[in-house]
Amino acid sequence: MILADFQIRALCETGMVSPFDPALVNPASLDLRLGSNILIESSEGPGLVPLSIADYTADDPYRLVPGQFVLAEGEPIFNLPKCIAAQFVLKSSRAREGLQHLQAGWCDPGWNGSRLTLELKNVRQLHWVGIYPGLKIGQMKFMRMDSMPLASYAEVGRYNGDATVTASRG
Image (cartoon, rainbow, N blue to C red; front, side):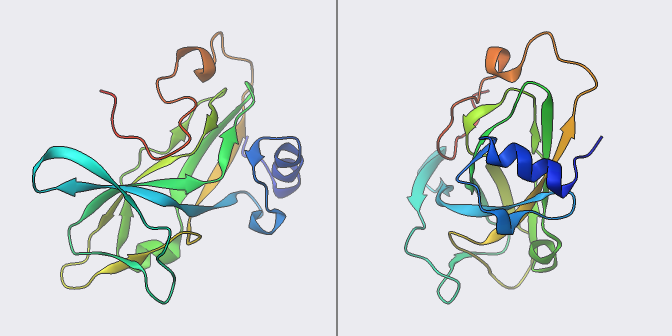
């Protein structure tokens, strides 16, 4: 069952997200904003290198060139209860601008102390797409489990406690 606005608000007010901004609650989701850190490709090797976008703004955004891929941190920090799962979806406005999310947005119950790492790509062929901290990037849908899992993500997950954008751990 996907949770409604009042259910999302109640969970957020008891610590499911931090910090919690009630203005970000939608009828069946919570808006996520872009954080200040991204990982970008380097011409010097196959790995990704960190880059702060803290000084970029809506008027002067970081420009994702056509075809560019980045990992980006979302805001806020999540602390999912053992009975709640969540899924990230890109906001339609971002998709209409040419931004694509690579669909790795599933969050198991018990995922906590973490920011969501977003896999973003500019799919436009001729123009850049701007990103900056605070940009409403997507929405998180929350679902209540019919029963408790035997083991939560807090016990079995590899990306628990990630306070910033995180590259693949294999």
